[in-house]
Length: 370
Image (cartoon, rainbow, N blue to C red; front, top):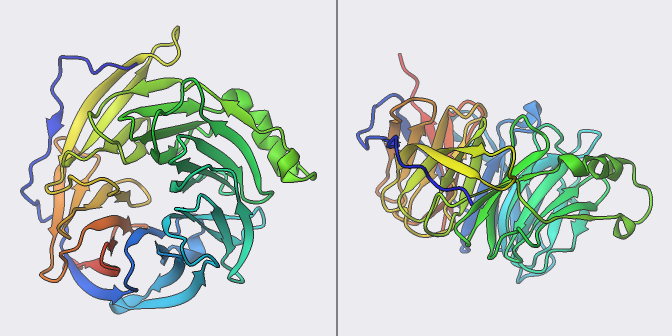
């Protein structure tokens, strides 16, 4: 397991806002009574960069951000099971470019919703417990990964409905998997993290023929030779508690636990011994009152900044690629007091959305500089 070397101390950001960018609230929507767990902009299709989706209870809602703070409802999908509670949502697309909204939650079923007709394209059954996060491969947006309470991560093809790979087994997670992410440029690599306090990096390189086969498979999806990936290529204990959000920043990883900070670190592999190596902690981005689990941060398209909410309804916006880290803005509003489960930054970071435990969606827009 990767040990954190003693030596260079990580650079910790100051909580004094730099006033680099000012944001103001331009809208607040009460979507319903049930908590909203996820909000995400569509970065898959440039026609829909201002479109976002939320999940709460058994409902998936698609909105559009318009000028002047306006939020328009485009679509709403209500699951047939009224006891479903969706925890995560991701945008994907069919191989012909049709936009899909992919949701999962307490039932462990992944719903692939065709946003062109608001109908279910496919439902994926396979996980043995609830789904905590779904992410889309940006280079091949028909591929998604799902992280589950059943201690596994699964790779799916939304076009054919096939479960291609299952990341679990001897070297897998030993508790709920809370977050997963595709590497931005290395198509073979994913990172996952969870309640066993670890972050694991997995490679699909030797299984890639199965990924390619999943696009041309014509038999029943259940007959596909799904493979188990049992061992990660890297394992790190950067945190001493649940790790509930991890994202690649180039070859570095941003991850957070329940200890009021996001950590930027570099996994350093040992070529000779797979799975081993060191985690070099580079920077820390403090987030006060962020000590409950299942709070996820988001970044703009180019990963210039990260926005994260806390349990008191405040948002911290950090510049990611500066050292020491710079706090771009701290956003607070007298009526925003509920825990923010997730934020969504727009393509250029000029709009920040937050979805809250009390069923509200908040929209913040950057104030234009003269």
